Figure 1 (cartoon, each protein chain N blue to C red):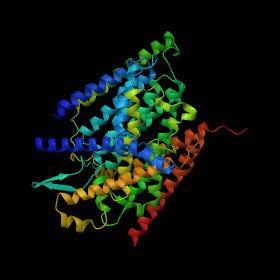
Figure 2 (cartoon, chains in turn blue, red):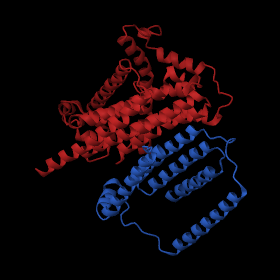
Figure 3 (cartoon, rainbow over the protein chains, first blue to last red):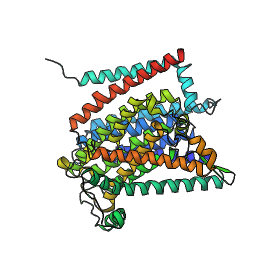
Figure 4 (spheres, one colour):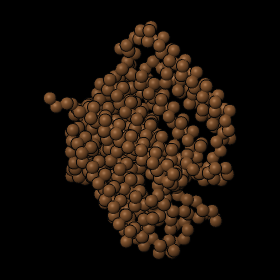
Length: 165
Length: 345
């Protein structure tokens, strides 16, 4: 049952991610992206990572995508005022996309050879265990990444401040 | 999965759903009666005795109205908006513990749909999704006023979610758990969290007012500036859904506040009552007490609405970012220091 649910949700994720790229209207793209994130949340639940699932739900679906939608609505982008891109940009985009595909396929082939990682503790994703891991063996990287985020936040605030002349 | 388990949960979900809709229905009636009481009027009294059938009359009116879909609107999203508002309002009830277990024929039935170990975060996630109904509906209407209102709603919700999350962190420092069931059980015997977290409770309540778009934070439907707000273009039951979702949100946030800060289904003298009434009636009295607390909060929501005038937009942002967020951070630090000192000595 688990496997069939996984394949069903995975298909949905792929379909909605494709719709994000192919829809012409930017607001529709964002809405499809929200649905894609929701399917990711389901994936986390299937992996028994409840905390990660609900954090993905709150942060990506509830906060970041609201901001995306907010900005798009504020700019009110439509199909008719979308700038047309020159052929040069399109060719460059195509080449870059092909490079990405090659890299992804290469890395996927590399992982297929190695052994799949077996989880020793299937309850690792539950809140208490995750907290013990994060504040135990992974204390330093965890705190460092929080400082990284803080510096990004301070930088963003600094950039928006007008310089005093 | 057992069939009996599925049936049990299904019945529970249907009952909770029905009760939330009923309460939301009669909240519209109560709102008018409370408004009338506060303004020294009579309020609705034509439909049935004391106007008790007024919500039914309103419902029939909503269904019978002509349904208008604006020609230049986005038809599909125009329909999705109200549905989403209703959905996000209703799914919050799933993790709220409505009572302790009741025993029917040797079978223990918990009065809670599911007790996940991230219950508070689930509620928080549902709250953060709530704004999509308003945003999508407002944008799909293709009306400048609706769009402005949707943008206002989004910025208001994002701003107040931060303070709300921070006030919850201080609560978690006290409770040490995210399961709502455990939080309620910890508050047994006058250990109500509001006594340990008074500032946190006030911050949470102000944010709950803002998240449910209730006065004095009802800027998304500010009539004097935005005609009708995000539902300007809506008619018939789609409009009804938006209005109804607001009352369900009010009910759910009252339930969450009663659960987190006011002891849920705990009440003084509970052990004596439980010992003398048996395994079915006793827990149901607890549930009744819980609902009494919820009704008290709903009354408070209405009382505030008819007492305090609406904020101006800059006042709203000022209160959220410069008032509540620093207060909530200070609350976390004080709570942390106090807990550290208590554990030390």
